[in-house]
Image (cartoon, rainbow, N blue to C red; front, top):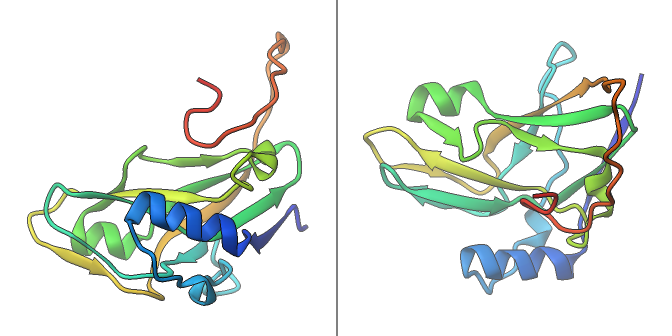
Length: 161
C-alpha cells in the first residue's frame, strides 16, 4: 500500500535554503536524490546528503535535503539517524526524532525537509555528498476524541508554536 510520494523542491527553494542555512552559493541541486529503501525488507527510506559537511565534536548543522513529501492524511514521516551514523560517529538529530506531518507538504517553504544533525561523539566526522545519513519511516497515527485544533500550517520549523 502506497501512502506517500517523494519529490524535489524547486531549485529556487533549495538554493535559498542552502544559502540561508549553510552559506553556500554554489548550487548542488543536481545532486539531490529522492529517498530510497536499501532492500525490499527495509522500513526506512534513506535520505542522501546533497553536499559535504564536516562536524567537529559538539557541532551542529542544518542540512537542506532538497526533498518534500506528499503524505496521505493519517500518516506521518518520522526521521531517525541511520544506525551506522549513530554507532560509528554518535550522530544524532537536533530534535531527536524528525516529524514530517502530512500538511507540511503545502508549507510556505514548499515542505522542504531540512534535517538538523549534531555530533555527540568525541571525533570529527564527515557526511559526504551522496552519503545516506538519515532514514524516514512512515507511520499511521490516530486522533483523540476531543479534537478541536484545526489551525492551518504556513511555515516550517516551529510554525505551529
